[in-house]
Length: 263
Image 1: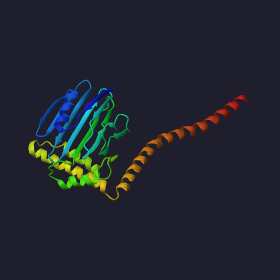
Image 2 (image 1 turned 30 degrees about the vertical axis):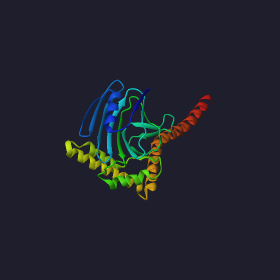
Image 3 (image 1 turned 45 degrees about the horizontal axis):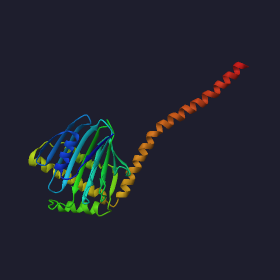
Image 4 (image 1 turned 90 degrees about the horizontal axis):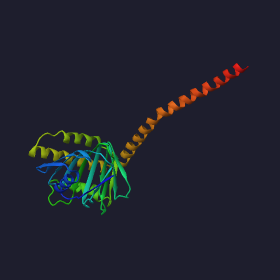
């Protein structure tokens, strides 16, 4: 088991910390960061981009060669974190002994926290993980989209001190990430395109979490997931029932044959 401690701060400080901790190679330009990882402990890539409106996006594609705990300093109380898992799974807790929740493939999570305690990410060895993160700092001095930031604060920070939700990923958001990952433009054009897509993802998150029918929608999604899991069990049950039924028919006939022979 490996234990890694990561300081938070500016995206510059975060990526410098990752480069040092994981012995990676970091390239940065125009508020965009690309970290290549190829060590005995970890292989993969971590890419990031940050904007003056307080939005930061990080794309993670990594595999650890050993079970690893990544301890991250607490988020600021004015931050909102969105996480989307597209491969593997990741276990999360507040503090090493805190309640552990699992973010699975095709699921997303929203987290705010006023806790003064580290976030712990638990990675299993040899399990590839692909994760997209969007962090929004709502108290930046200059916001170019104050309406969006205001709605994020109202939706996620004013509900309760430690708001969190996990569920199936919104398909519209998944499509937006596909668009984000397909951008090949560089410089100001590419930067602006990424910013617009990330803002549209956040708008969808606000819509998802403020709809009057949200509870019903989530209940339907969960019900559908439960039914799928139950359907997966049915073939096994049918097979077992069929075997038992066949055996019950064959067994008596064998006993009859035995008695006839004895007579």
